[in-house]
Length: 143
Image 1: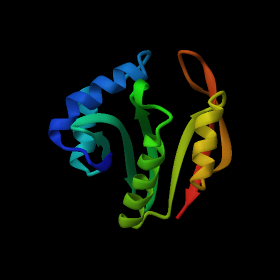
Image 2: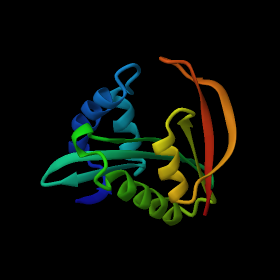
Image 3: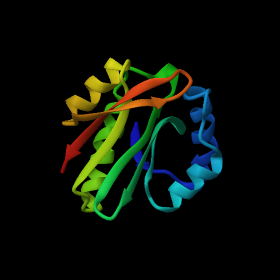
Image 4: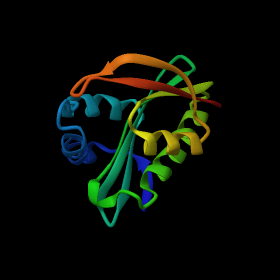
């Protein structure tokens, strides 16, 4: 498996995976096309098939991990781990000072994975998520 910058050809598969992983409110394909043009869209690919993706955005020297997803049949195989490592490397190459993310308060496994990569809880956003309504834990990795 390799993690690389996503290409235009990856966009339909990324949008399809988005609909599988986030069916209540998936981001549209055009969003991924816009992010891909800024080099903030990373794809995890194995045997020519998309296994996962991550979205890193930035404003000045501040980064945001906006989304990370792994195909359901590929979970618990180190793909999210590899994507997070690549996101951090990309953020360092962009000379960002930190990366911030939100994670559902009930998503303990994701929070543990982020903590493994050095993200620490720094706040809570009440009722941040919808469908279902839930708080978000704000986590930051200082680079």
